[in-house]
Length: 264
Image (cartoon, rainbow, N blue to C red; front, top):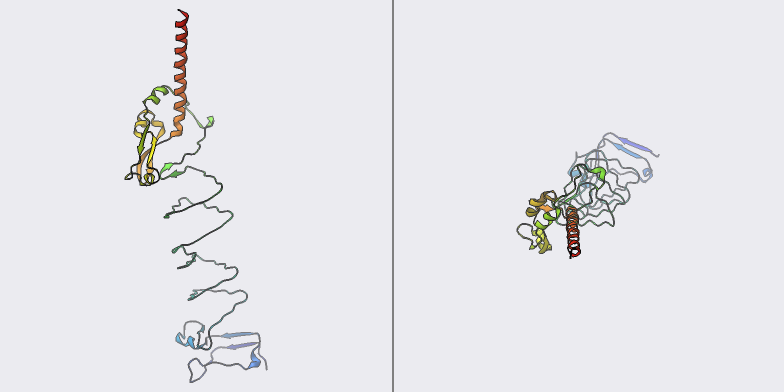
C-alpha cells in the first residue's frame, strides 16, 4: 500500500516519553505532502505547544535542519536567532530592513558601496560625520554651494545677457589707494579650524573694504559664526579700471613734459 497524500485533522500519540513520535514505515517514504491542523516535531517543540500550526523544536539526537529548494513565502513575523546565511538573490518587499551589530549596519557603521551611477534627489540633506572623504576623478557642482557658510568660488555667468544696469566704474584708483593690504595670524578662538591648518596669511580686512567697495563683501556662517568675507575675484574689475586711470594720468604727464621741453 502506498500513499501520495496523508491528511490528518487531529492526531494524538500516547507515549510515556516527552516528544513521542509518529513513525512511518519505510514503504511510506515517498515524495508527497503532509497536511495537518496542528503538528509538533522534536522534543524542543513541547516547550511552546500552541505557538504555530507547525511547531518544530530541536532535540539532542535530532537537530533541526530545514533545506528549502525553490520559493519560500513567509507571511507574518520571522524571528531568526543565530546565523542567517544567504547565497544568491535576497529580495525583500517591506518598509524596513534593520541590522544590528552587522558589518553593513547603519547603527554600528562600517559600510562600503560601489555603484557605477548614483542619483539622489532630496529637498534637504544633512550629513554629520567625524570625517568624510569623497574621492572622484571628475565631477560637476551645479547650483550655489557653500563651504562653512561661505560661497565657494565658482564662475558666475559673465554673459551680457545676464546683466542689466551696466555702468562704468569711476574713481577706481582712489578706491584702490584707500585699501590696506595686511599680513595677519588667524585667531584660534574665532576660527579654530582655519588657524589649525594655516596660522599666518595675507589679505584685506572685510570691514575696511566694505566702507570703500561694499559690493565685494558678503556675510555668512563660518564655523557657526556670522563673519564677513571678501569676493577677491570681483576686485579685478576695480584694479583694471584703476590701472587705466593711472595710465591716463601718466599719458597726460608725458604730454606736459613734452610741451615743456618743446618750449625751451
